Length: 209
Image 1: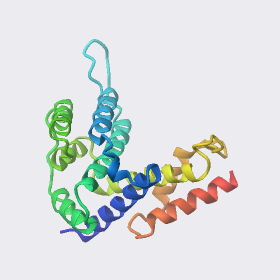
Image 2: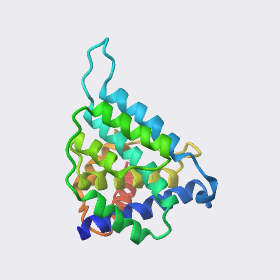
Image 3: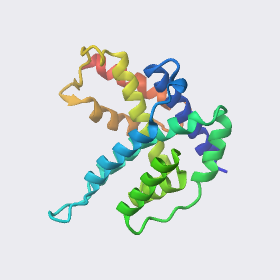
């Protein structure tokens, strides 16, 4: 089993738990409808992929990947709801995620099958999700980098006045998302301090901008 993937999953589980605590200090007891959030994100994802037969459409793969990252946030939350031991959960997930997953023959059908399981069984099917990642050529390393980036940016926004409207989304003439993408590529994602390093790098640029 990949120790690196296991470590990355443990980090992501901690980050998601901390983000949920920021929303509500007793988030586990609130019974949030994570499955509903995933369902809505899947609809948005399909719009980016394209499904309208009456007009010319081309898949916007980058946006599809971003929607999958958002779905992963909610999926981790569902998994945390049913597992108290994060180390054991990380080990279990690493075992499920390191297997080679073939690309789906029909991506929209694969997405609908994934959504059907989430809605009918109120669980997050890792095998179906991994198939969707394979369908847009997003590996576990890319999933990790993108997830940590989005999570850290969400924290950063909240810590710098996002809720009261004082946060500046433009720094040095560029949106925070653009700075994030650049920094994620510059920093060492294999470092255990990747999330902290990224937050500090965002803070430095924010203060300069």
